[in-house]
Length: 494
Image (cartoon, rainbow, N blue to C red; front, side, top):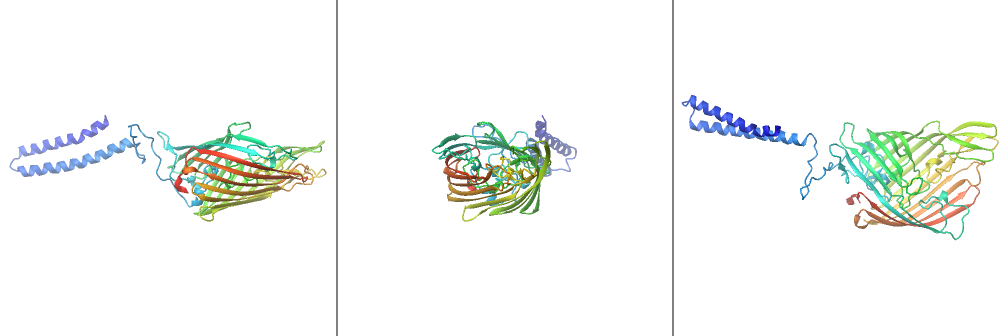
């Protein structure tokens, strides 16, 4: 109704003005001649055209609202097309060219939180606007199938974990596995234009639950104004420094864990950030002998601090971890709760070398940080009892390292060579069958035909584990993988 009224306002005004002019001419014919009347009419018409133009602008603004996004275009068949997100999102020197374009089979970089929620893809490929809101959403993830053949018993049949290699090994035993458990799906919600900057909600899951193909939550976090709350990669690790492997687990000596946490990040300079976090504690202490039994406890949150320097051809990162490892220890009638201070330092980097090639490397060391290292996580060796006479806990020294080199043969064909090591210095009281150290190596070739959503590859893996008593085992594996990414990564990024 309002639009109809607005539409006829110029007609009413023109009629009223012409009547007024005509009346003037009748009451004082001597003062007005025909030429003057015609000029007045022309002047009135010019003014009315300006009024009409202004009314059209007001009507258009009212129809589209205050949003600056373009109206939904129509498809060739006349049906409405979903509103598009902004053509260009924010960029920042805190996300360099190498960080934004580095690709791995696992795509973990997509899930990692970023300073100011700056997207790796500022064009927002795959996002669409939720009707009636400012929120944009991308439904991402991939479908992945692994065909795995073990020449020797390797323990874990679907992820290559040197710590799971059985000792002693049964000769002439091999194994074949087909797995879809690495398949994952994620929802990436973003609100680009708010008073506190871009807001992000991210949820992701895969099928590596406790049973075969059971869903498992990987990430569930929200970040606004650089405050993060929820579950995601620990602030102690560097997801941009992961080597590119087909294997779901990845190198045994790198830090890789997802923790519920509260984190805040602030900029020290245009390319340097400092992040601090308080994270869910979990003392990984499990030992039971004829003399001792333990029950773990977590007296305080794990604390981390991370310094990151970003540059166009790569990044450098150093992070620290501080924690309290505790357990309730019983020995006959003696019962006590003991705790020990744990600490760790993780240094990592990734950078371009020649052409599109990338080198990643990391080293971690500390006491009582076994839970945070791939191979030793879950083995219960964050701390051990010093001796049968001394019932105090001692944080076990831990080290880990990994290096990976990614080489591009062509735009759609790449290879990787990876080596990693993890080790623990056990106490004299630790059982002989306790994990001591392990090695992980991998070499692969990955093809992305026609820069499409399909990725296929093959990988050879070799692992080695040695226990405290000196017994050891090894396992060679070959793996074929195919992955279809739900949202294709922009081909012009490589």
